[in-house]
Length: 247
Length: 335
Image 1: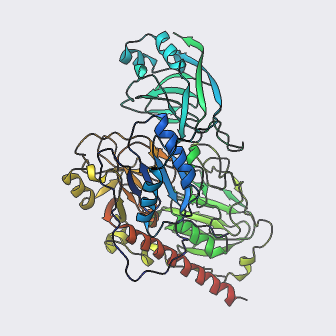
Image 2: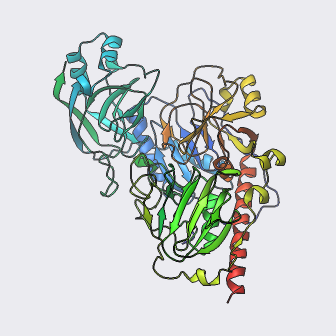
Image 3: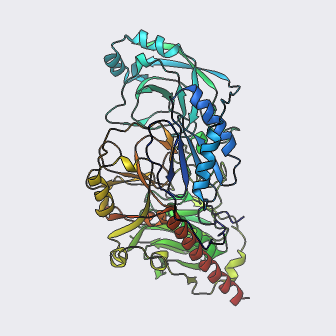
């Protein structure tokens, strides 16, 4: 099969009157209607207004389900209350795609997944949580309080991204929100449980990160030879369980 | 089969990339210069998406462990087969025991070594490309090392095309000459690379001075640049107000601007999501130009439109069609 997606596009007959009306970016709007912007000829990004909460996210999941069957779609990729549409073939008339997205968003419903609940045993603090002192300093809470607040909620997997198997989670208690680090840490190990701004997450493999590491879990989040390769999917839920707290 | 003789680092097995797994966090990987990878395969009569070796550090040496046809595309690495020079963008047959040496490049940054049949490594999640962050794909999910032995899918039998190849081999005009863009002299000298850019989501948030610098000033490709991204150095780009982005999907070519104001162009090993403001995107049709820009050389961004960017893709496609016709001609001539 001659697969060469970016250059292999069949060339349609050119219309004699080609309209040069593509606005390259949609102007910043006051938060009422969605923003749609191009990522070159490779993809477009759809950013609806509203809070970064589970309700917006469920509508994004719904939109993703609709869009992934469009002929121009190679992949629909949900982000944190937004959606990236990667083109199979860059559409000639990208304005029509934008219009379709806006129209369909207006009737978007909340898609509920029958997600699983996965419990992650975590060792908090000590060598496993090298930045917990920064979280303590920033929040004014004790180690025990931070662990209690972090282990209380049921977190929703909003989307996967960043690196294979990594989950963006919703639902962290804002009391333990801590700004990202000024200098990212290199070579953070897989399984690192961390807080970055108002979000929390667990790295799935070794790599750099600007978040504050507070603990570690042994859970394996990704295996390319497993079906499906990622342990978790959007709609799944995570609960952190304090296996041990090291002072 | 071939054996890697070099101690040099940063060479890996790549094809045109891994599609369809961004939503589980798996970036595309794949050849930095997809045009060179595809052309090398076409010269050999391979499927365009066959895996080849991407070489980023020179000198680089391999020994052929069997008679096999190969092609070299991408950077002009003053290649030698048992000491005899080989032109860039060339295909040739190698005899068992011959040693291929690639020297520091005269022009371009990345060389592609294709074998008749394509490099035989397992397909993982639909691709043979090396996924470095996930440590899978390619050859054992890592860069090649001295002593590694790689086979081709047709290893052990003479590839059909092998017999059609003229003794001296044949080649094609490299795309930097066939598809010129910008100041041709600077491009020929390799001191400056021009790439077309479409404005991205936060383009309108930059100050007029920032946009002026973005389009009209040189951007140096710093030594902190690799397959993940090119970190550029120039006049810092400022936004009119502080921007806060929610994590969202990104693609190779996206130009992010972190708080330092120094842009980073995401490339083939980029993670599939990010949160920094995006000023623009280098269009897919020009990413091969970026892939061949050397460290510490200058980059210029050329404004384009969506329609022009589509035409540029057609132009690349036409170039590859020419390579295909040429390869077909040689195949027919020998019949």
